[in-house]
Image (cartoon, rainbow, N blue to C red; front, side, top):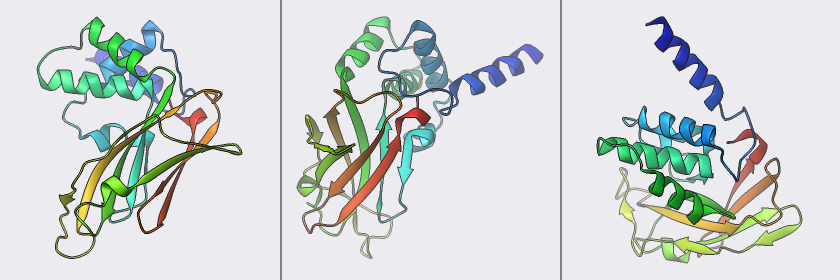
Length: 195
């Protein structure tokens, strides 16, 4: 029992998002930690599991989660654990290769029209430069919110990917989302505070 408690304390300390900056290349130790973290927290929702990587502006406004390679493996491990298995080495490498050289965000957005999501635009601000997306995944129609028919009426989960070229592990970036009416949401991320 004492040994298990020691391991839990050790893993919590190692998994602290304050511990290191975003790592583009994960070592074997980092991979094992991410898999352990995700597989042993399978009961948590994605927002709960990735709270350290998330900025939430509140219900009816929106949220953004920075999906680092480490966070991506946590999600993979959680999904595998829900199927009562561990992710395979092939799945882990495939996940890391797919995200290589890119920075990704999962965003929960709100709107008043069921088809608002495809009109959302995303830009990543880094220093004096604005980067466009390399990939977007926007649902053609949104889901009803818990407050429907009152405002906010609809919610959508959107994904945006940007090139990571020139962005360091300890830099600051801001995800800027704009809807069809020109309303802007800003999500500033300090990469040095995340794994």
